[in-house]
Image (tube, rainbow, N blue to C red; front, side, top):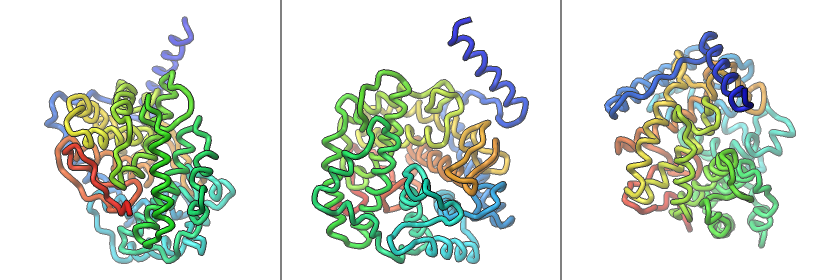
Length: 402
């Protein structure tokens, strides 16, 4: 048997075993037509609200998953964002506890420190850690009606002459996911500092960042990477990188260049189950990294791609809904355990987590709104919860662009 055939047999055997163990459900094909979308969405959202309610009742509202022994700032930030998406109203005592945790985690440098996870990786990482949590933390504070108690002083180094170009040059663009995470973490925080602190230095830094990003977009892909995208794995990596950069541009009303190439690449990466990975059980990150730009770029170009994008989004929605567990929460990746940087941010195989439920629900809401024309309330902030455009072929700034 060939290597490819052997790998396929192993994958099928693995999937059969996982089904027998009950860690995944057999995935059905989506029904014909689109009549299933609204009832499936409503049922999903009701179950998510039930999941939030159970966290409150069991005192787990600041735990990443039920199996985590410690509370975490990450969990305390995910919960308000999840409530905002579903319309769930937290009790006054829960909201007060969340505010206390979030406000108390910021230090004088402006960064948010999660003491349950503190490590060199937390301090220096950008896929998880002190810089990564900032756009999530800022959004959670806004949902709770609060503002950061300290200015974002850790961004000062980017406000010096020539600093932005040196910063972008220092990143490894052969690993676009890692490089782009760094850009999003710092770029969206700069936009926040510009718009909510009225900071002119941050405004100048954002203008320079946007100009440099536009210059550095690859005309063959409409994304940010170094090297050719010769195989599917490289294209997946590029898409996961671009997801972190598009929000910076779109928040300021800037159309990403060469977007038609990006849409073609993303459409070509959807797997047979509707997700966006070489593996059948694509993760919450891999799915939203593709679906979010696919929807936003489609709306920004009016109906040019609608006939091709809509079926892909419908297929993706059906797939993402399969990741909801009986308790109403979601898994990061079906059939696998998940560790998000530390033990205080982890979940067992088949176990719901606040992170996965928030990110999966964000993608579900975006897909539902795209398919139906509804517009659930998002946030007027830089970061993950950007409002969808109207679909008239233009991009309007959400933020200052000042």
